[in-house]
Length: 141
Figure 1 (cartoon, rainbow, N blue to C red):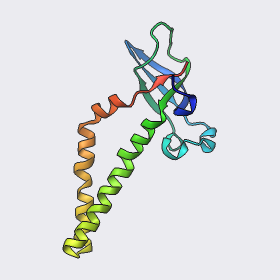
Figure 2: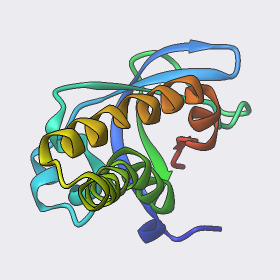
Figure 3: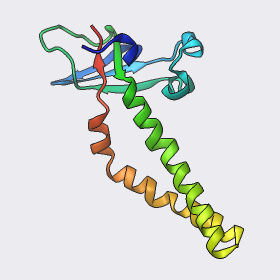
Figure 4: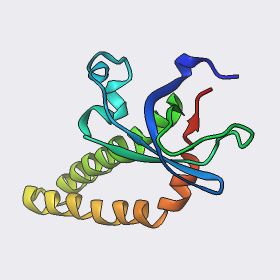
């Protein structure tokens, strides 16, 4: 069993339930400002977020409007940070340095570096279902 400190927890309200999936509305709280996970969580910047939860106990009764706490493993938060921010930054920076070394043209180097973000984010978009399946939220009991 995972420790509570290994997870990111957010209170929410069940919006909708269909078969083995439920959608939970999460609203950031004032406590987000003091949370130790705020640097990579991203919940403090959004007004309201709907999260799909596929892992929940079917032997327990859930209803729309019910308050629940959802959890995500902290390591998955780091993976999201890496895919969304760190890897594109590394691609951008390394391309810029390599292109500057090859061409000595700052404008061209910057344009090529920025253009490489198009295929990167296109690949992320195409693989979104695969990425989504690895980010599993669950209901904390």
